[in-house]
Amino acid sequence: MKEITGATRMYGIVADPIHHVKTPQRLNEYFDQIGHDGVCVPFHATPDTLATVVAGLRALRNLGGFIVTVPHKTAILALVDEASDATKLIGAANVVRREADGRLIATMLDGEGFVRGVLGNGHELKGKTAYLAGAGGAANAIGFALAQAGVASLTIANRTQAKAQDLKTRILTLIPDAQIHVGTPDPSGHDVVVNATSLGLAVGDALPLDVSRLTPDQLVCEIIMQPRETALLQAAQARGCRVHDGAPMLASQIPLMAKALGVPGAGD
Image (cartoon, rainbow, N blue to C red; front, side, top):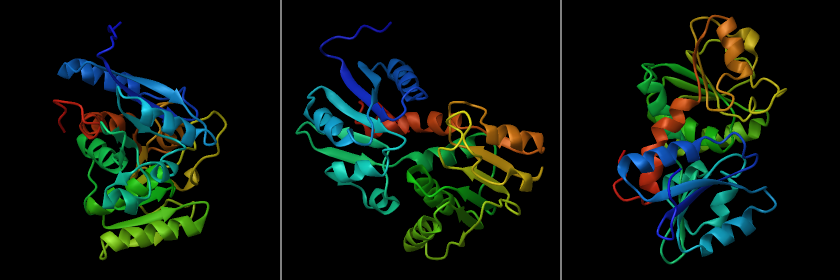
């Protein structure tokens, strides 16, 4: 076990539930690789205690910052001091850096991490038709990133259609010539299918889309890391689809997260 001293820089991840998180393990491995005296630990904060927890984290002078995940990625923006224009447009963040004066600076890396993970595993996105299930925090970032990656069209499907329409409008604000549609639970006719909801995190969750409409020519992607093989991926494999699990999205983000947290020597 790494020795933690009074000089060790502290980092955390804020989530509810917390059991599934993999970021502390991966960040701590990365800190060791680059020789950084830092440690990342999980912080279990519920929506009703998030503001109190963030206020406490702001006051910790040896805290470098923290990662934010389900269900806090949208709510965190109201609790920080600064965010980039792109992060504000996305409407969610997953990394918060604490400055020496206690100011909190937020950024969103989920979209870039997802796209890097998909491309790094040898899959193509440019010119492909994409289907995105979800319009929450991570889905917002992935929607923007898919459009920026050059997909031919993007269909956004969400239980509340107004949220899907809102995401469409915001993407078009940044990328006016993008082909964006609001869809249904039917993912057929798309080259790439992405589940960017939290459905699949818990045993017994409903499926995020109509798996009976999946076809073997499709690539089905997850952002959930635990379990690694969700019910959606199992159903997709049973129908002959290629699958892409959630692990590469996190792996691709680790250097980016460390850099955003202000870790000395972190790269991308």
